[in-house]
Length: 195
Image (tube, rainbow, N blue to C red; front, side, top):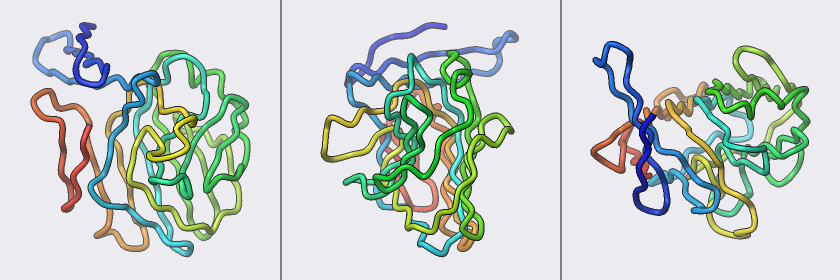
């Protein structure tokens, strides 16, 4: 793995397949740099809407309020804290049954859904939390809660292949690869993600 520093103390990690044919580029978000991915407009799932959000995450270090998805003022977020607590809208929705494996430096697929008021947090095919939830979710950042308070830490690690799927209104769904070397933006369905 080759890394080199770029703007805002983010590093790009370049990985190549053994055959040397495929090249993927990932940006490592550093908590100290307070870096994130921002959306040009809010992605919204209303209180009665079914949705899922997912992506591949590599956690660097320990869980410490790592925001997976969030809005500008923290009114809506999905964040994981050190004890496995999952926060949404500033309150604990539940606690993950296990978190130790999540911080092993490996890539993990996280799939979070809400169907008919049932909030499910799944990691690598294993359900770690199921809870009742009917709140509105409004996201404009991946990897950090934007705005204040700034004491809330940003995600520390690598994020790739993000999907925000609006099951109730599929036309409102978004997907971003987050693996581009030549540009700091990606556009999908009229929404631009900047990193």
